[in-house]
Image: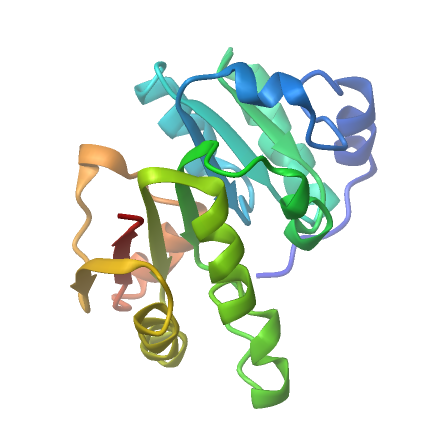
Length: 204
């Protein structure tokens, strides 16, 4: 489901930089409860969660500028005031995030990078897990959803070899609305009756 380039989306990102900053800055950390979504896609999760949970501040990171622009439009159109979208590869900015500053990290339908030589690019790779652990607060959480069983199985191994504690493994996630929303990818896969896999881990 590749998204075609849309110039208006890129222009909107430039025009509304108060909602689409290009870098991490200290203003981010004035918020008490911060949720970081890495790979926001077209923003369905981000803006819906922000509307449902106004006591949290949602930071989306999406490297595809068209998808980021679409997300930004949803933030604007729905009068969301507790979410921003950063159009960058997470590897460009993650080291700028303060340690012990994030309450939760969300990974929704990340690129599986199926070829073994590309596994290090996965968002659940061991090098990133160490950084996630450092930027999360004590008792902070990471939730991971995917339609890709091989990525899921490998990710369980990655987390088992990390400092995180696995809280829950779900091989046929039916959706729990208590702190989750259905993404555009998830809606597509569910319509195909495709299984969704979900993993919850915590930093103790």
